[in-house]
Image 1 (cartoon, rainbow, N blue to C red):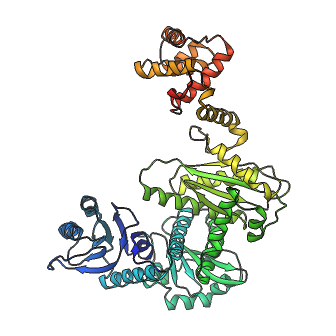
Image 2 (cartoon, one colour; image 1 turned 180 degrees about the horizontal axis):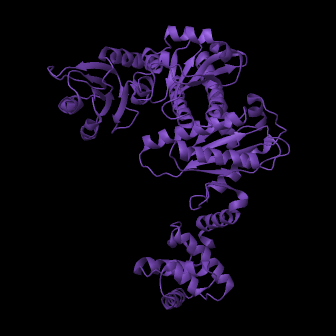
Image 3 (cartoon, helix red, strand yellow; image 1 turned 135 degrees about the vertical axis):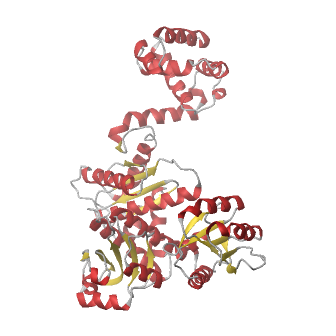
Length: 542
């Protein structure tokens, strides 16, 4: 059954740059859009419930009144032409205040063109499944990731040279790219040149990256291209146009990986079903959760189940609130991991569970000390920081000798990731953080079992909460310093005598003997639990 409406997310996928930019989406990207209407400044505003309203004849700040009027009458999205960047802040404030999404339309875009594209996008959303719409979004997200990795402007085309997706563009695009995107296909004259130069044949016949030199006489900048192939069949191509800054040194590797990832999406589009890619991801998730046997997934992706494999998990340090923003960053990370992994190993698989991205690398060489896998993880983390401006950490699981034990590798990767938030290192293995993992998991046992808690320590915690005496932090720091008062006092930025007084006060309040190694050990664990905000002191038995 088709959808009854499009979402703002789907609309952005179909329109996007260079037609329009999203200025504000106070209700998120899942706002439903039912139709398109045109509002002229001389018109009397009507009912626009769930509509995309195109405000013509009024630009920039001057359109604020009509934006509010459309919002009051139920508009889901409003499109306004913004001739300069100075007006964007005012319009964004107006949109957020009115509670309506606003698209900033490029001045050179014709309203009839935008109207046609928008109506087509909504019609497509009504006629296609949610999985197909997700796939279009995947291609646009992939294009944006490749643009970040290569430093160029990216477009993804099908085998008939129709533009399927493209990265956000800036003023560095040449005339060819502009015409291709606005026309949704490559200009016939340029396609004829590509055939004449043998570029099309090279894309069709090989897996290598093709270099196309700059042609100032034709208004064409330097480009890289690669065919998207399924066995011997050409499904499409990916093009990267160089701007004012040269393409990055990793551009060719990024294109190789992107072509392998894009092939899965295009096969899925061609068959009209989500079976291929989604099935593999579902099988991988099921495998991680021990809901299927490893032979099922191994057979589906065509790997040797007798060879070593490993799981690497990636997660972002969440520094920006807001669900839509997190979703966009998560999609960018997933694509980044997929592109790098596909270039490293064709059979690599990625999936997202919660806020974490999991990378499965099967078919590893029998002699593998993990150096290559660790290097790949570091490369991905560095690329996320450099190209996406995102702080990502990676936890490398254990390399298991056969694919059947892959759940063990995933479990190890998760255990490592669970303790990485407070670590300076961005990439870690179990060998790097084993002590932290063991302490964390021991604390989890104490947290889950109140009978592993000493009521005297519970009393100390309650006293400290009530009197704000700083005793818990002082005792934990004292234990961490192995009883070295001067070292602990220096960490706390207090005088050693002050710390000595607090330790004596803590012993008196609790009745604990801090010279007894057994009491000291469990007091340390329970106080660490309290210091991390875990556990309820009242749970401890009397």
